[in-house]
Image 1: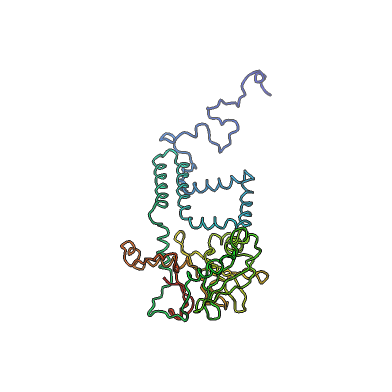
Image 2: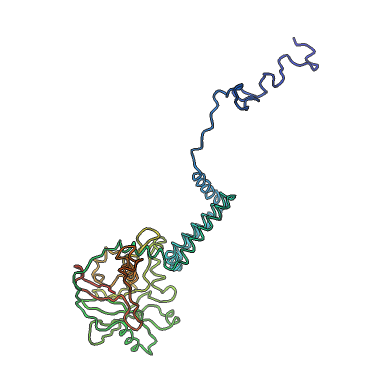
Length: 422
């Protein structure tokens, strides 16, 4: 039986006031009590089983990378446009890569400066984000970034290019000559004279020729060039490149011949008829557009053994470690006439297997100029600073043959073929 007084305000026998040894309501046997969070003392020893605070095994770099990765991952997830626009942009770049080819070339040529400025801005941004109260650190990073930009932009010499020349000089295969090479053909008509005579003969015909290039056919040397109408409107109305001019470079008598051809694309043609800026970039991927460069200065017209004409354009590859890269020969594009095949890329190791490409003048002059300039480091890296062993390419007047000179040598270090020399 229960006492009737308990129903009228009397306290139950089992009720205990908090703080007098009883556990609060809802507390389990393992939960801390009200006084368990007090610090340990001689009179109050530490609780049994309490884990001491362990040091953090991760450093600040770990948390920086983790936070940046989280920001990169969460930002596109919350915005649909951020996920869609990169895909659309990549597709547009691939489809319009022929229009953006000059942009790709400019970005690759200025990539060291672009990367340097980007790193400087990244340092400033990270400093302001993770150390906003350390003004001396922010100011120091800004001064460092400004110094890097000034050195890259205002230096009297291109530092990256000079170091690239030094790397290229040590990477190239150099073979000393024990005797002067011999030629099997003596060039009678220089390039400038050929230009003047052909120009005089085409006066009043509303036609012009492109830059003459050296071509070897059936053991004879010829100058060849593209024949196109004068004026942008006339070129735009032209359906095909319809003429090639050939001049015998080793004959006493001036022999000029005209050949009827039908090339769908040509040099310096407008819009979608342009060979270098439209047709050939379409043959490269987006990665190749950054890593390779089409030589826009040397478009050679070569006659095959069967009598057909093809356009040959060299390709420049870039070797070395970024940003100290140097050019090297990357093969050639062979463009046949309309309805006679498709564009094909021949790698350097494949050229020896193609008869009409063997012993031709295929090396771009830009590569020859680069390695000729790199020869100033023939006395070592510091020899250039001490002005020892410096080689300088003479600037030849415009009314004479430009360097490098192209000649067919019979024996150069055991090799025979076209060579460029300064």
